[in-house]
Length: 331
Image (tube, rainbow, N blue to C red):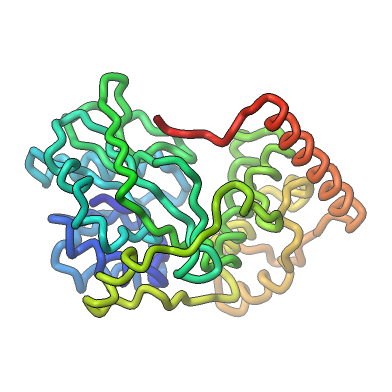
């Protein structure tokens, strides 16, 4: 198992308790966590923590770091699973025929699971009718990830796709809506700074948290079997800590300080009290945040951009319906 971590103490105990029950080794690349993430990792014998020393968010570098270390310390044959700390393997997965199929697959096989977003409570989820490549039966091929939103495992053209729809991964991020909104604001700011998504309405569509996206999937009850086995083992699968502010917020404040707030006036980040967050950060001696109040855009501009974004969203939905286009599917 390979996992990137940055301030994941809210979920890391659960993740490692579960993962230690099926993984031979767990390699965690920690990017300068300031919470208890490293202390939690030290409690699990199967965990090896390596340093991800960069200050910048870069999925390509951290994936290559993790893959390089996994190949150095885990002998072949090996199956590399790549899960984030907020993605928990369902308890019934290891007892399925699909799991045995994965373990017997030849090198050069991409392993795809269903990832469901828990919705409201751990007993409900949104399903998306697609499978996600989260594992690779390793043959040493080069991995060519992107800096953002990258596929986590090698995807060579010759590789067989093993579509294991019996195996479910539970994604906990949406059970912390404030933290998820903070993360999406941070993504929008990063893409603005880097110029990787230059069209502002595309950024606003991609990183909107105030829109009801339940139509993008089917909301339904979770199977009791997804949690039962882990709960029977004494693992708390339900409690989710909520926080007032998140490290993503402080990273956005640092960008506002470095580049000036006006650069981000058109981004969908202004339904949030940045001044209150700035004062909180100052009171906790968090470095790099603005010394003066954040210069927010005029309310009329915020309302106008919201209206234009709604028009863009509706047009895009209608265009997809007329063309018969659906959401992306990995096949």
